[in-house]
Image 1: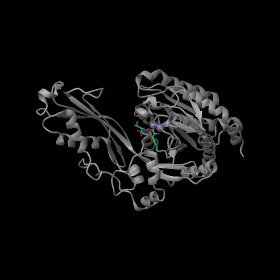
Image 2: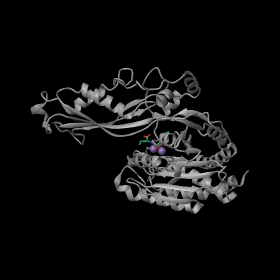
Image 3: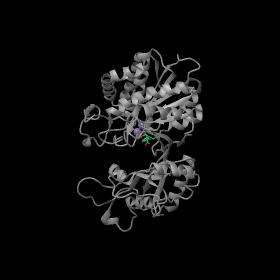
Image 4: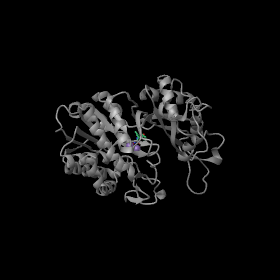
Length: 456
Ligand code: BES
Ligand code: MN
Ligand code: MN
């Protein structure tokens, strides 16, 4: 066993305690009241990276800070790895459903429970500890490393998306590694080669100029809450496909080779039921569940509101109703073009008895990655050593907006090697990280850096 692995195994308990400390900082990026705490998490990382022996800085932006750190003493012949992660976390609601407080990390049955434990503080911290183990135990790294950590991933990645194209030299690397995803089971590691993009929108439907008495006007005024339901009901066809004209025009069809490969690691129906708790699957019938998640676009209703929803009843015709809509987009759909198609379609189906307006809030690109590259082979080797199992290559339906930026702006191959588990409750109450995954993740990252150096 190499020194770094021995060191990492001896220091496991301390590594875990340090993660607890990091998890205590409530770095919720979407809620402006947590601005200070997000900055505090950035400062914590800068101090920690310096402590490990890297040069580290906090880079302030119009939004939340970026954290940049480097160790470039492996020499010009050694590859340079850009390590990406996000230190911001999702909001905690519904807070009542947490068994222990989200920012008071607590351990039960081999798991650390806290907001951000798996998404993504725990996973990015794996790389800090792998780098530390190598530096402390072996005095040097086999590769040059650059860390770029953001605090806005859960709220759209705006600042990093501007920073990357403006700092191509600083960020120049041979490979970029992202650990911000999960595996179906501890003995089934997964390397992602596709992520979906995102398009977030808001639909407003207005009718009367103010709320009306439903006895005096009911039956003569088209109720906006009803009208928005009518509009939303027309967004999909009977078979679950999206009804917006042109929506699928730019979707890259899956080739037979990939369909065959995805079929080898299907989303198991029983597992899907267990994970979702939903009575039966839904969606485009001619695509498998894995294909629907990884390779097909969606249009979702994330929330719908209007009128009176508190205790008891109130006989009112509300003046307006709102729906939060979003799309998951796939190669090679363009978010602006899709927004325009949806906007025009909604305008065409809005009854003349109400007004509607669709606003675009945000978007982030999809990513598609070539799996036949040397760094991918290094990742395969590393997982075999760290988890004792051959990883599968698969697509994921979530979004990490900057991944496409690393490819397009830096021209760097990206390896997405996740260490979470699908069952970690990311974005939900009782988010957790399985401690054994954290430890094996550190070992795997050490193997990965070494394998990269050997490939070069
Ligand atoms: N880590 C996730 C994305 C992810 C989830 C990748 C599951 C692979 C498997 C990331 O933190 C995330 O939640 N992204 C948001 C981005 C959005 C807010 C722009 C998402 O996908 O909803
Ligand atoms: Mn994440
Ligand atoms: Mn997330």
